[in-house]
Image 1 (cartoon, rainbow, N blue to C red):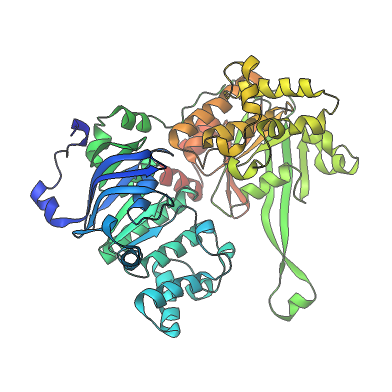
Image 2 (image 1 turned 135 degrees about the horizontal axis):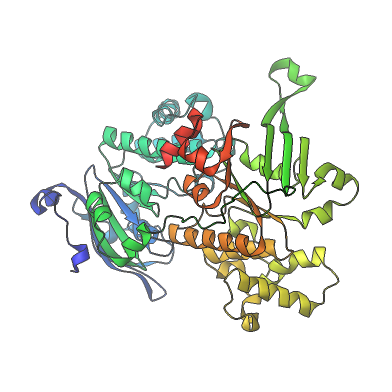
Length: 551
């Protein structure tokens, strides 16, 4: 056994550990078609312990955890996984059905895809209670509401009758946790439970898991790439790289003195600030200016009043902002704060009141006069999830070159291809622009998450815009890939003089990228100013709470 895998000092003695072990995994190997992806890893979890399994995408952490219950399709699994002395890997499918949910439950990464959209969340929790606990429909309904209430969802009786799309991200994650707890499992596997959540919601979900773990006395296996979560939540940490377990030990010891180079690399992956700092306020026209920007949605009024007129939900309330050439304005806030609606209005994709001027041109004026197409060339967008925003049926050449077909149709096929290869080289996907043709006929699924995000950036840059709207551009990426993409955006801003409207819930990303900050809550701008003043001397209680949650 390598030195990095030896137990660290300060933890329970070996004899104490052995008496308390709930799950003991020995020599776990996972292969697909003869290709091994998990290479004989060993780890254990004691009863009532919280173990974090950490690594980047592709490290094998999720495959390892799900393979314990044989939930990975076409996987060849070997080794031992002793749950209270019973080998899970030796059980029949029928026997495993009794373990899944009863003894071991899972909270999946994306509740929107894990929850059935055709059933209410109450129905889905009731199904578990009836199948696993043998409750009557009435008993299951009452128990489902109690479970939702235990997770802190407001109005649990009403939320039980809601469909997944009618809940916020945090509420959907709480519903998933309630469903996992329905059978009172001894081990809860939480697969990236906070990846898509705001910093304050992450804090709430971690507090919730900690409270529930204490109440139920269960062990938790947390799968994550977020080291801040590990530091705050876990008792022990195991680090995986390319299918190997490279280091494990008590959280305090690993963070204080990481022994493996990969662990040190993960800990050094916090975004770094590398932007051109403004010396004096620029005496030039802003690339973007909004005044009194207001966006509202019609909603049905309750009772008979709804027969005759509709009400209004105001998503953005009178937002004023300005972005100078070569500057970044960061917009931060929780889900539902209005920041994405603000971005849609700036892109001219949302009806609004007030003024939105891009490069000195009013959106409403440009659209009425037929100049909207020309204005769209000056403002482009990079979306949060590149896998869903890139068409799976289009090649790289078609995806990146589409903007040229719309805005510069006079270009020949050869000229368009040359520009596509050049921009791929600019975003770091092609080392040699003269040999970039190999990439052009590939499809999005053939690339990693970081490469897909670089494709999305290339697609936006191909038409030489002045302003990029970056909608959570790194929230779906691992910490090391996030650092690379942010460094790319910083370089492009310096070289091209780009302006960014950066939408994010990550305070570290704002700190690294932004010159100015806008803080939104419930559709209103509650604080604004330079990044130095807002993040280091916040005035509003909500801003202080966001900064505190991220620290």
